[in-house]
Image (cartoon, rainbow, N blue to C red):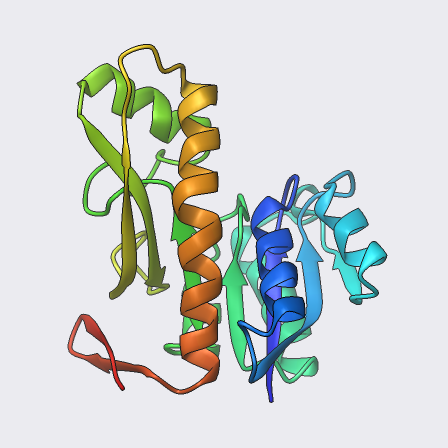
Length: 208
């Protein structure tokens, strides 16, 4: 049984999708054993409490440098014997210390079809604002492995979502969550826990 840590900063809807997948049996060979938040006020912490999942707040603002903050988070995950780290709306891009500690053991869900609308500055509502500015007809979500370069790790799974003419960033964000993120993130976590993801070079393959 793989031990899963979920990193959060806000409402925790992707955390909830993982909790629901665990309860339904979609995630059979993994268990969320730890939730870490960068924000004291994150509602994700309440979701963890309701579901009796141990949680810890490590506020980014309390640390002078990204290096020190990354070190503290990484050490906490090591102490928890974590097998898979899931970034689920975690608003801090940690440095390469954590990548070296958990190689090919960290995944992130990003609210666009990478390589579009990704990288530095593309997070949260900003992604959907840029999608609408550009006038693309399809957006979506991507689950990928985390590497030293932001949003450039091997892509594991993607799902497209239609962009509508009367969309606002908020409406589009909600549709991407409901139609893509909440669907593919639990699937990928399940595949990882079943040892069904193979990485060759910078490509991820799902095995039978």
